[in-house]
Length: 467
Ligand SMILES: N[C@@H](CCOP(=O)(O)O)C(=O)O
Image (cartoon, rainbow, N blue to C red):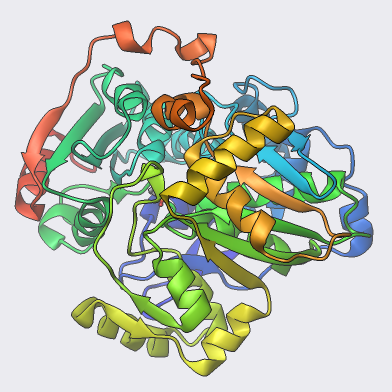
């Protein structure tokens, strides 16, 4: 399988190359040249496979040429062996139609672990084939940071620099990053910055020849294709349990960067019967505006109780636009250049109609989030976090036909956001034992002004050269 850029100018790479490159050299995002597709018989044959085996089966077409399916299975077995639930991503029924897909049983209690535990192993595998060192530069609004750090802390040939907007992640989220004291981990708290500012700094570094000449810059955010690839698997896992390929399922996905829901779109391209993908945002609603009105314009980021989704530029939306544009990379490069210049973009009619065939969207404000957390507790006995609440709010208001099961992706453990959950339900969720001493651990991080120059200077001083 080879990978092409959404902006049409970067060289095509194999899976190994795309995984190590992160962002394409023309500023675009890598996508597979074609979508592999399973027949209904092939999907039916996946029913009942343990998660690690299902993962290897679903991802095998994407890694062809870089990894054998046998080696991939060894890696998925190791990655998912660290999860605290045997099912890895268990499905929980809420009522006659609504389900939760719990994605928070990994080491850092959020869905990011599902992909990043594997990505850490892929980095090790591919770096082991050369003399190269990798300098990972990532941005987080709360969950990616700790999951990426857990995945690469202490690994040879990798340094990680994780940028977070100071004061805009929960205390649990911050401590999950800053209490990892391995020498290859560098946490940078950016002052007066939003996640969007941090993400823009990361993307700029991939195109700064002064940096790329000295360091092999790598990505752990969902701009890295391997992240999304691993997330496709849990759509298959849930769909199969609910009757795929003989029955359609709808998914509601809380998302800020459009990565998690794009993985659902990929599952649909691969043949999983999906009735609808519901994109759920908080009041930082660029995705809802884009899908409902065609208005993809960057608003100001408003801090909310669901900070991981406090995002107003959604990187992976570009991957969907690429497909909706008939995969015309040069036309998309022009459209994206317009967005980067004006911070606003109107979707074409063809893009809107193409998206409407599969996607719906909704936005939850603070009251809607709180009342949904309360509903899940009072009616189903489930404590859910504020991000999951956005998803469940959207799932319950989307008007999906009663016979179609609706699966909300439960993206984070409620104990990552204890105040919001306690305010809504009177119950304070406690941290699982495996992270129970988080508040006794020592923290280490550096505070920087939120400018590109400050971050680049810090990385240049502390990273290992590429060879
Ligand atoms: N929601 C994320 C923001 C980064 O998104 P990613 O999926 O591109 O890594 C977070 O919690 O950090």
